[in-house]
Amino acid sequence: MQRQRVDAQPAYVLHTYPFRETSLIVEVFSRDFGRVALLARGARRPRSALRGLLMAFQPLELGWAGKGEVQTLMKAEWQGGQPLLSGKALFCGYYLNELLMNLLPREDAHEKLFAAYVETLRRFAGGVCEADLRMFEHALLAELGYGLTLAQDCEGRPVDPLAYYAYEIERGAVRLDRAGNSALSVCGKTLLDLDREDFSDPRSLQESKQLMRALMTHYLGGQPLETRKIFMELQEL
Image (cartoon, rainbow, N blue to C red; front, side, top):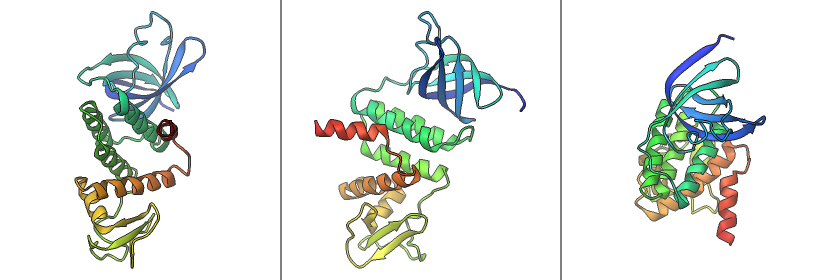
């Protein structure tokens, strides 16, 4: 495997975990290389220049070199311009990172998804919005090749905004005689609003949330997300 060197790469930290006594393994989402694992040598030392830089949700410019699954972080510079997230926005940011960690394959570039991630974080800083989560999930599925067919049903007919549908994964929308009772059952207007990313209708927003939750569970292979688990526990409290 050929050694590569990357310089001045826009990226965000998704997750870090300790490696040996003083180092970190840093999972980052980069613009041109997708999700990459980097070894940050000495980053846990008290006087390390990297210690205060490798924060989630902050724009960085990284350089790395090496070969294999984990390469060596050579340089990190903070780019600024992104306010720190707090409260619900911080929690939702960790949800995005957990989706990317679990669904994005390593070293698979997704420039459009990177741009969507940057824009979503910017919106979160101004006050978290459920609609922003749905738009990011929509973009994520499209970039991974799981794009949803929402304006037409599984037989190619235009979706009727007044009708009811069950969204069958890998097949599409199946028209129902009456309203269904599962998370994959929605009204036609919800499908059309999700396709347009218009969540001004509270019903469309709520049904889109249920639909996206069911789809994410499917593509995650049933693996529970820690952020969702913690959020449910906080709601119970």
